[in-house]
Length: 331
Image (cartoon, rainbow, N blue to C red; front, side, top):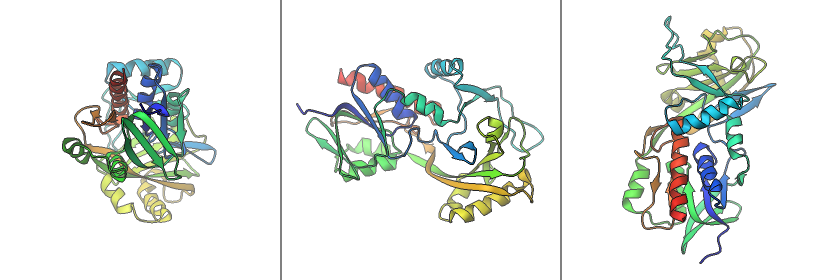
């Protein structure tokens, strides 16, 4: 038997990867989680701008599943999570309130990722370049030539990135498995963060959702409770994101400022502006199950927010199912 560095290697330290790692670690398995980002969380992302913070990936989450509800209730009791709203205005005179809670995180969405990562062996800043099969397990190589070996491998990065890593290592996926991953689709999102010198005219509780508009989402992080001054997050819809994608950041900031004028006024100054491009922001074509176990290979599983259902809850449930499946297969 190969002397592996860990029982399971997980590529991707977002909600799915961290949840799977927690399941496996609690079961006594040796788990290493790597992520190319500087911080854990993936789209559970919060950035400091000026004296405040702005959520610039996922903005909130909902709860429908009983397992996820158990965790959320614990986070609420601990003071980490709070109910932010029960719906959003679309900019019309009628506000949409469907009674379904939308939850946010005190200190920003990334604070939830940091809690999930606590006590796990998570290594950010590790960019994997290829994944190789080695006898009865796996070896991942990063761009600096370091190697990580494990008996089981969980890949939670977006499907195009996952396929690129497997192809770089010449891993022979079964046709059905490859077709399942290739069928997954995502829409992009260009996000702007704007510290302004005034107030924003947004309905309670400080956010507006307009799927048909160029800027589909606008939120004031001050009113969300994570910034001391008005700090807006503005997210372009998929089509507008494609239009903006290759423009310089300053050009995008200027374009978005025009889109924001109805909410901030023509004379409001933008004190600081930053842009984040999310290439794989919104899963549009999902894998029907929360996890996919590769056929005729050593232990290899795929998960993420494009498995089973989208949203933060879907990513959690995918991580849960993937972690349990690998745990049971490892024995």
